[in-house]
Length: 124
View (cartoon, rainbow, N blue to C red):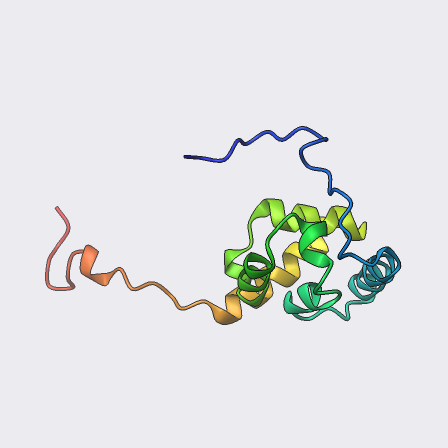
């Protein structure tokens, strides 16, 4: 079953979580914002590592999903990138550029040569 595409503001709001140290979360987000602004964030792993206990709650992901996606940026969704932009108050283009750059490094080009006519065949 597909996820509902349009969330309400209430559905997309993080709830209080006793495991999250609010001061540590505030500091982690402030630090990430500063690091995005200065170009110091080179890997999306750095986002998940900023405050690993609280960041999944801020992103609305499970810990396992957060680690899986941020360690392989090709798996990040547009919603993930927009959420990072929202919670760090960072221009989404900055975040997208980092994610794309890292995903390109990890990408293996797909070989579709078996789906195309061979060199000896001519086009009609």
